[in-house]
Amino acid sequence: MSDSRPILITGGAGFIGSHLVDALLAQGRHVRVLDNLSMGRLANLPLDNPLLQFIQGDVADSAVLAQAVAGCAAVAHLAAVASVQASVDDPVSTHQSNFVGTLNVCEAMRLHGVKRVLFASSAAVYGNNGEGQAIDENTAKAPLTPYAADKLASEHYLDFYRRQHGLEPAIFRFFNIFGPRQDPSSPYSGVISIFTQRAQQSLPISVFGDGEQTRDFFFVADLVILLMQALNAPHVVEGAVNVGWNQAVSLNQLLAEIGELCGGLPAVSYQAPRAGDIRHSRANNQRLQAHYQLPQATLIQEGLRRLLAQS
Ligand code: NAD
Ligand code: UD2
Image 1 (tube, protein in one colour):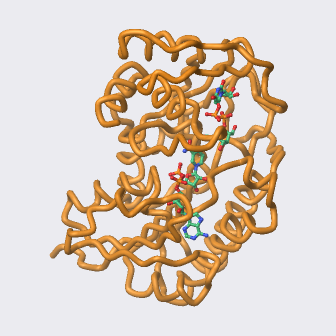
Image 2 (image 1 turned 90 degrees about the vertical axis):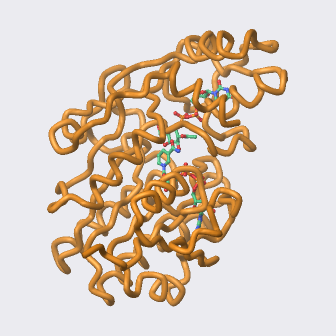
């Protein structure tokens, strides 16, 4: 018999969360979204689908969270202030979302006997360590910002609840995720969302540095395949798992691909590098390969093509 208990997705109105909502609904699962709409948008959700329930609320509010978790089969905890810069500017308020929210998820799950939880951690926990090589999960942690410190502390608390209360946390350290619905509105939004939007609107593009810095870009549809596996797997992988392809793509390569797909580029100017910018970031993904069935990689050109087609 199919499971009619909902999956709770915190942050489900956002970029990654809304794609997970779509995938679960497509499988006939009941989905409950808790989002405060600080960044997420109702337009990202198929609100007319009777399998979907939307709750507008804050993960920092333990009472709201307890209600949202009640009766759920599992939780995907994706709600966070995803902007690193916002955490630098306002550590106290982002801590409420990015750490207290996680603790509230753990407590609510303990109270209601819900075991499985996916957690969206970040490559930010490594800071600058491992730069220039593929970073594995044992690389020393160096959280350089409140965002990174909150993600790392969240990981530790999830592990405490695993040992103490039998929670089943599947912790992922995302590298650079991209795809449709990523919000390009802040200067600190994902670089692909900014470059593609500006190329489509013929607005000038700024590259910070010489454009030879590299990132390990991962298409959101591929990520969702992994998250679905983690929700359904009989057992969770203990410890965090990097999510990247172990592939380096430079910003100049990105621009060349975007130019090809858009039939040209607007003016591109090279500015001073951003303070604290990491030069090269690339995931060692052996743990991911060992524990998950990786989909065929959506390579950058194909991912960009799909993103541009949906923008
Ligand atoms: P996003 O901003 O699109 O999604 C986050 C969602 O959480 C938004 O809908 C926002 O409204 C909601 N939210 C924020 N604070 C909340 C609160 N206090 N209560 C309830 N809802 C709240 O960003 P995203 O890229 O989809 O990120 C999803 C998760 O993945 C985040 O935890 C982020 O830190 C993590 N992550 C993303 C990337 C990436 O490359 N996009 C990389 C590493 C980690
Ligand atoms: C990503 C994550 C961040 C954190 C970090 C961990 C996003 C949006 N950010 O930061 O949350 O997890 O990884 O290491 O996913 N750039 C330009 N022009 C622009 C915008 C950006 O040149 O208009 C450059 C930027 O200076 C950087 C690169 O593009 O060199 C990538 O920037 P980003 O903000 O997309 O991602 P990153 O890796 O700095």
